[in-house]
Image (tube, rainbow, N blue to C red; front, side, top):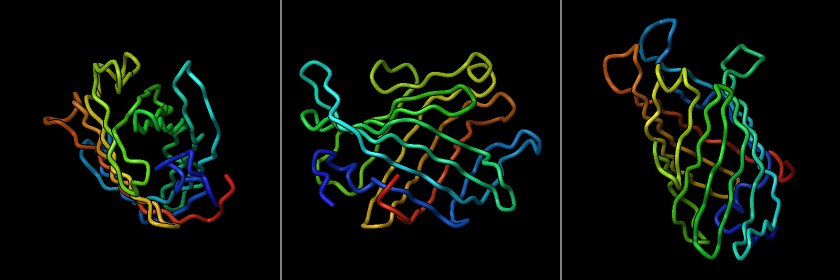
Length: 188
């Protein structure tokens, strides 16, 4: 299938799933410590565009992801958002919200034919930044997010780190998530 207008995002179009190969390493409030959680995931990327902002032209992916612990029917983590490609500026942008009332825009300069790229977001940035609700800002202050994406045919991998100044933990928490998914359909 040809989706040249979507640049480096073209390879993500479709529905992706994994077994319990994902690994979430994060602070667990109940246990009061850093724990590892294996997970399975389903993510869909549906293409749309063009989106014209004056002289800026974007092509995007509407995405949804749900992440499940083994033996559970309801996801413990979900995201909804957009991945956008600005060919003129060579910018990939990922805009998403999680159901803890936290949102961010991560981005980076990426070549149109790249199959691996890195996006980042920093608290306080007017361009690629992080916003949290008042409770999270006080208790689990997120200061940085970065993700590396690799698309290889029908395999999609990511490795992401969220840096959190957690009031219940004595040091900065490096919340990491890693997974490799397989494309199960070109349709989202």
